[in-house]
Amino acid sequence: MKTPNTLSDDALVRSGRLCPYCKSGTRIMDSALVYNGQSWGWVVTCAKWPSCDSYVGCHPRSQRPLGRLADKELRAAKSMAHEALDRLWKPSGRRAKEWVQTRRREAYKWLAGALGVRERHCHVGMFDVDMCRKVVEVCCEKLSEMRTAADRPVFASDGHVISEVFA
Ligand SMILES: [Zn+2]
Image 1 (cartoon, rainbow, N blue to C red):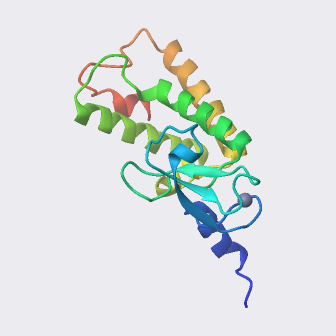
Image 2: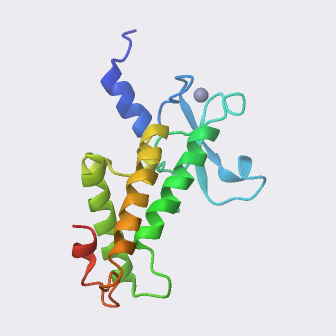
């Protein structure tokens, strides 16, 4: 059988069909298996789990993986990246769904530019450890920039300053 080339391997890894660590295939499992008996839907694990500790969650109510499989180090890096990014766009109080979606979209658009990646590939779930660290770095820079400029309203209640914030 022909060995898949690097490019298609990358695509398989990104779509959660190939374990990036041991190059095994993957399996769809109930998340109760990896989350101490608590089921939050489906997860995709390495076919060699648990000896290869690599998995990723799925989109809500689907068997579509959120991104590439992650080992313990990457899972920690991803959660830090999400936390840093959330601080840029998540409202402190309740907002209309549309407002939240718009601001989230703007934040990801800005992030893609800051990282130099295509918007459609700009998902923390698709990043490796180095990219996750870079996310934390650029988000922290942006956050301090926003704080320095805090004498003007950064977060207007109607969301109209979004494009200014992420310009
Ligand atoms: Zn594996």
